[in-house]
Length: 240
Ligand SMILES: [Zn+2]
Image (cartoon, rainbow, N blue to C red):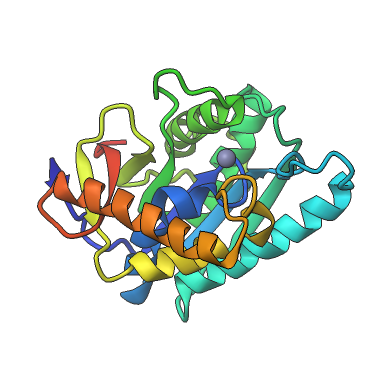
């Protein structure tokens, strides 16, 4: 188990839905941002299926979730620079084809992150197809971004990130110490208010405390893998 990459100058989290980046790497992004790292988010789908209320209009949910993601990113970044971009593909219908890979590669070339973070596409028995496809888009998009013969029509130069960190990893082998940033991660997660009752299981004020405890316990479990109080665990691909 390795621990703590050097703080990158720029990091990019590629997430299937609004809230995935905060669950997967919110503490790590907050820690790096506190040292001046430029932290950006690329959200692939529009989040339009993220409600248990069948009567909720999809377009309303999309704009609410965009706002929540911008708020969450601002909580994580505080004063550090960074950008939030939405590719707007339909929630639940994400595919990892060439067209989508080209877009992800373009954003990696345009934002030039030293570290890219995303879903692990090789996580076994993962049910949600968007998370699987988002994982392949982040790995395949990174390969395409670095090599000049992929998408030579791009108006941005090829870019090779130094490392790729995959969250919810099938075989985690790296931990980022987030002991001082658990509260920031939780505040960023809770900014996704539309997800409180569904994804986060929060139905009362007490529920917020229970959620904070559950997530803190999870961070403690991941931290123990590397001998720190609280951590986020990843599969590290150090040579892209
Ligand atoms: Zn998700």
